[in-house]
Length: 343
View 1: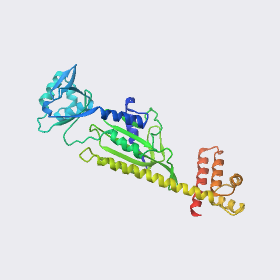
View 2: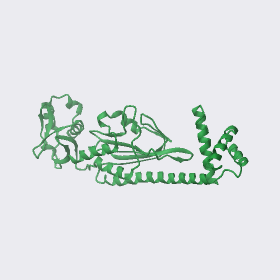
View 3: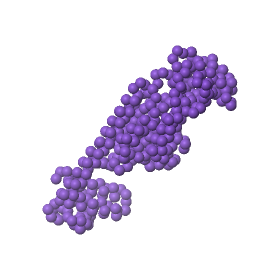
View 4: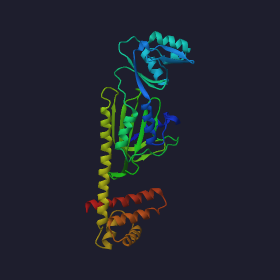
């Protein structure tokens, strides 16, 4: 079993304005960003940096003027081969001259993603954009029973979208199943960037606990998939659909298996008479004073079926004072269910 800290790292690098209360709210935000964004293809030597209202802007060929945000400014510095830290020390007019002198001469255009009057990213021709909304369309379609985890101590929700990327953390809070005698529930992360900050990706897993810092504890069956934003990036959506579908199918199969165990436990008697039932319970480590009470409760419920006895023992465990003793009592009661499969 492993500890997953990806969501914890996201939690502490996100501001309140990047967190969303629900998957629907996050999806609508991403859908609107897609709707109001467009690509401008332009040779780098024609961008004509200039100062507008004290800030560095680029003049686009269709006549518009657009400002850079922090991410696209960083990309422009890389394309120009000059240090962002150095440019930040320049006066706006000096920065403009620096870009005009260093922007490359090229025969292929640059790809500028614009939203309103802001340039969100700057890319070469090989970059292929995948919209965050497209990824969330797949998530909403396949992971219908999944929802964000409990809110973190900081108020973080596990659902984030900012200037540079999107991250989504979902679990199935009703999907608890037994795996090798321990309880696990399914969950996954998905992430993407429309502006080249990170790859498209997902990580699915089965977990035992999530703390309020969004650390995922005791995870098993961890599967990770990533895809770069090249020409075949949309093939990654089908891979993510398949990975989430596999997670859901495993959950359903394990649920069905557990349901079959319960059904058999409701039909299977632990013994033919009270003496035989008492011996079977004692053999499974149940103390004698508990056996007597559990058998009395089960008898009132209609007989000494495995399910009735497990239910009785579980009720009695709630009376135990200490948590460790309660856990031990619950464990011994749950172990009786395995007798149903052997019957």
